Length: 280
Ligand SMILES: [Ca+2]
Ligand SMILES: [Ca+2]
Image (cartoon, rainbow, N blue to C red; front, side):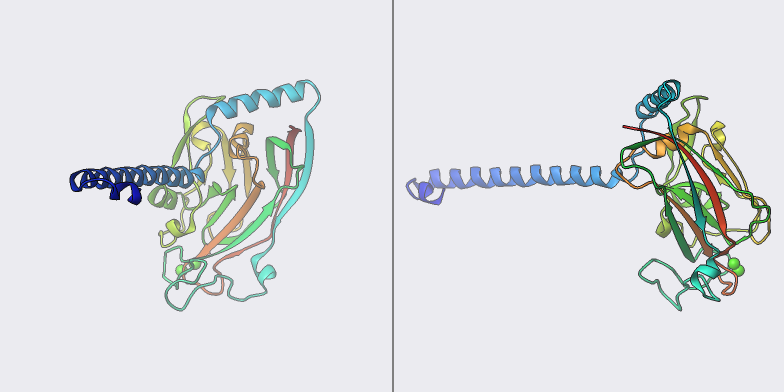
């Protein structure tokens, strides 16, 4: 370009440099635009959950697999161990003495979710398994935990005893209930957004899909012992497993405010998991 420009007179040269800077600016902004779009796409990706079309197609595919005798069944125990037993610690919550640690835990503060302990368990299924139904059961008569818990699946909140924190700190995805009609709110678990949210020792329960008749849960309020039960209609898990490239993972997260000896404690929660799936 430079060699070509040097063969021209001053006016022509100026015109050429103007044109080339215009072109460069144009390219710069165009590529910026593309980068922006890419960022937008990758940012929202974590939030993308199965589309209605995906859910409907899979509900149908699952019915067909049942009708043609191709449905597979898997059974697995998922255990979220007693957190005191698992850690061997008297003080389970990783409170800091000030500021935040690299996992985003904070120092003690009455009445707020400040630090948490997370446990993770994945379903053991063939790589090409397509999930049709997941049922969780247990025979526990007395389950105890302290303070706030979150049960997640593939990082979506299935259940928590601090519904207000979801409403205050996270943006829901409103998704459709395919069988029953209506919609329900789905939240991506995000500790950094949730931490410092207040809680009270009252019933403030969130059970995914409950408002659309797709979920039913029972648990005691914090610091009390009682039955803990979860039940979701098949389409809920079908939607949450839409991104089948990832491992199907449950997490149990237990938080604390400022009670060193008891916070982040829960008794052993052993869930019998029954999965219906077919092979793609
Ligand atoms: Ca407290
Ligand atoms: Ca507490």
